[in-house]
Image (tube, rainbow, N blue to C red; front, side, top):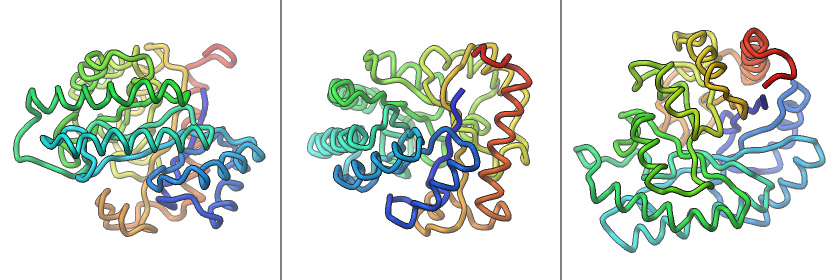
Amino acid sequence: MKYGLNLLLWTDRMHDKMVPVVERIKAIGYDGIEIPIFELNETLHSQWGQRLDSLGLERTAVTVRGAGDNPVSPSASVRASAVDAMKRTLDCCRAAGVKTLCGPTHSAIGEFTGKGPTADEFKWGVDTMRQVADHAAQAGVTIAVEYLNRFENYFLTSVEQTVAFIQAVDHPHVRMMYDTFHANIEEKDLTAAIHAAAPLTVLVHISENDRSIPGTGHVHWNETFDALKSAGYNGWMVVEAFGQALPNIVAATKIWRQMFSSEDKLAVDSLAFMKANVAARWKEGVF
């Protein structure tokens, strides 16, 4: 198992003030970090790739699409913008040494039509992702499609829908991720959901129901870890939590009050929580 921490806890772009943060994450004992790629600057991400290599930190990445580059827009020009934005994001991943790019890359976050996804939107989304998939392969990156809960998007809101989407795209560099926060809202049976997702799952976000320290809320953690073990999962477990440091992230994630005493405590306790649950189920060296 590999353990990571999503940097959206501190920042939505990589900059020099993040150096002591990632050094601390390494010292705590994480295998890697999850970097936000919203600023499509290959030079910046190449520099960060070199920094992280020197620290011995692996990395995944997260990105989103918005209204102007919505992969399921009825506008062909907007969908073309989505293809371009995804290709540029993948180029930044390659520059940074990122092998797995997660996030709701299937549609625009926070955009709603007032109804569920249509057959046309599904077709547009699949077509857009197919146009991106070969570029992902060339960049050496696997796209881990993330479904969101119904309050953050309407296009993909369950494991069942996400599996159907990925099967329709039908490309080895397009897979999915499982997020315990969204699943806690949307799935009726966590064990069934994890097993249905497992053949396509390349990353798991470990996130509490209130986005605080995992293990301090009401996510069914024993069921979750038991199911991951029985499904044979062996990959990234990345903590995703949110604070109040970034106004844009606060607005997007609806974090209106502080959920933990400090980022450092969250980082330390979250890693201990994941390792304890894995150690209780997976025999050392047998993953």
